[in-house]
Structure formats: structure tokens, C-alpha cells
View 1 (cartoon, helix red, strand yellow):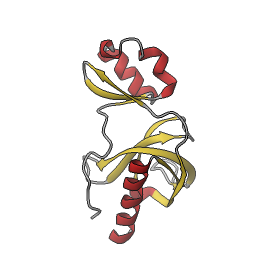
View 2 (cartoon, rainbow, N blue to C red):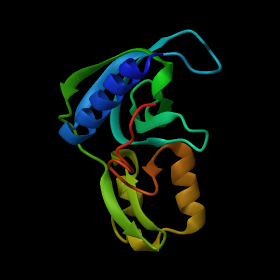
View 3 (cartoon, rainbow, N blue to C red):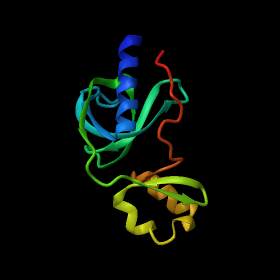
View 4 (cartoon, rainbow, N blue to C red):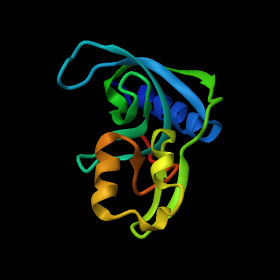
Length: 142
């Protein structure tokens, strides 16, 4: 993938995060290699520990928070503005956590008391993301 294409893709993701807009496109995971249509509400973009540009977002295909490498999209475009409920950003003893609507009833009373074990379960199920951040850093595509 060319640097210009990756930079355009990054700019689209950053604009979608800021504007609360869904992204839609074809994504080829490492396991399948066959592109699958995805609709994603992104909320974080950053560099992985291996240096790839990745985004975290709610994926309607898996109905969970997932991480996507930007270079694995064969097509990525802006979709409709987000009209549903946003994740709630809650303070916990482990820092701020973005909790998705599916788990709100489990944490609304006293989010600061979420145990480390419970938080691990939320993260594993895609109900929450920690640490919460919009754009961790505004990276440049390379």
C-alpha cells in the first residue's frame, strides 16, 4: 500500500472519530485473507507495538470492540453519522474505561468499584476498552 493511500485512510479514520461517523469497507484479516464487509464505529487510532497503524472500534460484524490494521482494508469509506448511544466513559480504579451499551447495566451503579478481574472479562467480551482515548496520537502514515 502506498504512503499516500495509507495517509488518506488515516485521515478518514481521524475524521470519523471526530465526527462520530461509521466507517464501512472490506477487511481481510490475517486468518481469512478473504475480505469481509465491516461497519465500524471507530474511537481510537494508534501505532501497534510492531509499528502498524491500527484502529479500535465497535464492529457490527462481530458485535464487539475490535482492533483493525489500516493496511488490511481493501476498501474503506465514510458511512452514516452515528445515531445510537455512544459508549459511556467511566472512571474506574484502573483509569478511564469506555463501556459499551451492552454492559451498562453491569456498571452504572458504581463504576469505580469494577474489579480488575471484572474489567478483564469486559475487555475480553468486547464490552469495554481501556485505556479510553479518542486519538492516542495523531500519527503520520509511513
